Image 1: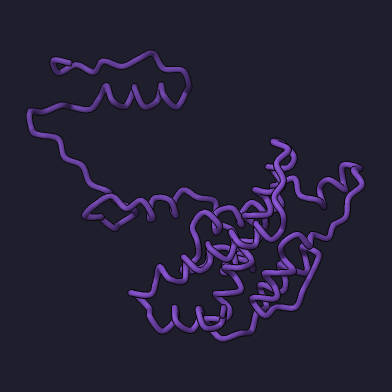
Image 2: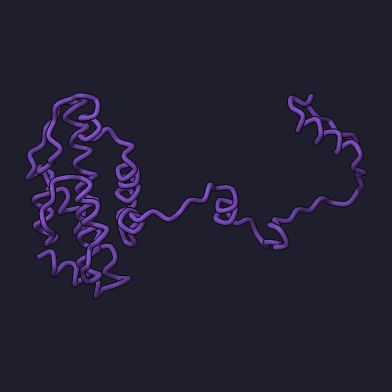
Length: 206
């Protein structure tokens, strides 16, 4: 203010060192300017992705990357699959660890969707995840299988929460109808951008 630094009292040694340095910086009447720079690279504009990659904790790529963050997937299903794969949700295997008696198998919806996708029916989560990672199918069938898998996860979790917290129950036929509608709408959504893929997936469905 009026050519003088107006700064709060420092609360750490780092802040004190910064303020001490600022007191020896000479001010001038030129307009301020700023640049975004990483090492020797000056950026024309701020890059969120570059800054994120600079500050994030880099780890090896996980084997389930492409089955969770699927191209042409349903965004909310992609996102929800992430904590599920990381075992951050209190699913049945966690309930077993807590001492609650329950069956690891879940046949509420997956039997129906697996049949539609042409997959072998699997009833345990590690086997299911492994099966999705090792899919060896044409592109349209693989995408279809992943859409069915993620829709199943998403809708089953919603139904689970509804039953536990609101005491509301839907029959499996109603849940599978919701999944069918979600997948058909998603397939139809990219008819303009990739008519061939959309047609192949719809034919596979029917």
